[in-house]
Length: 131
Image (cartoon, rainbow, N blue to C red; front, top):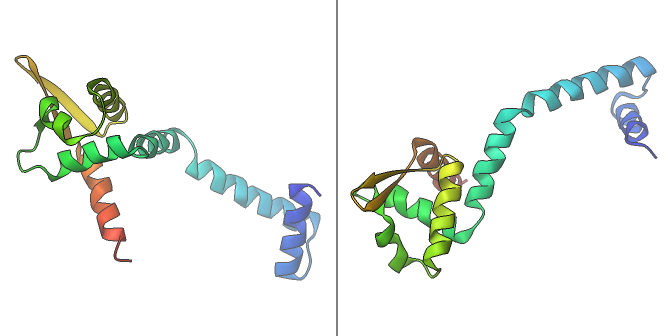
């Protein structure tokens, strides 16, 4: 059974009948819905969620979000994470690429800060726990 046939059966069950015109109308509505959630925003959101989908990266963003100093040096993160320095560096690079972390160089040190978008996502996650 094709997906269109299944949709036709569903529309018929919901409305009592399903003409070709009913089916075409519903398909047009669904295509419009699909277009409204696609595009570059979808890709950006998936990149962001993928970046948070790893314990090390998530913990780094959480620590940067929670610090009273607004930013941390990579040397301050290393003792707190049970991974190699290269894994931390790779994680920070992915977080930067996803727009969750910014970095700046201060002499020989690299300083990292959570972005406003990262902070907003974490606040939303915190707020959703009580729902």
